[in-house]
Image: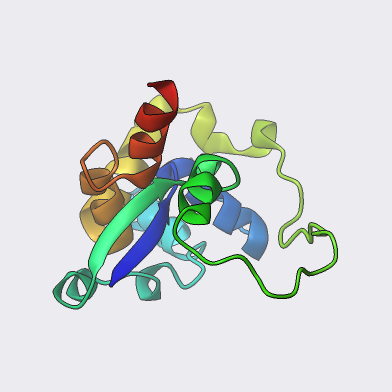
Length: 150
């Protein structure tokens, strides 16, 4: 059995979570501890979403979050059965407020953004998995893109 995990840019994903919780990153923090505390306050079930133990029970593959409605859907349409009953047209329901990246301090301070990115990669199993999977033979959207370009 395969498990498909959507992967997203770490910093963009973090800032989306901060937006959801209406929190800000402490870019002006005096210590790394204070900075990382502000990062952790943004987490929305992030440490509960993925665990490396899944690899013992499933073939875990990844796909690019940005391609979930085109390449990934195309890939899955060749695997899943068509629905017996078609639902009414899809209506998008926003689950987060619109973001204003100009108000997100991490994009203005490269040292802070690099420190946070490194912290996320070292401490969050989901980001570790995505870092290893994206660009590998286990990335579904790369396979679909290569197939579509042939």
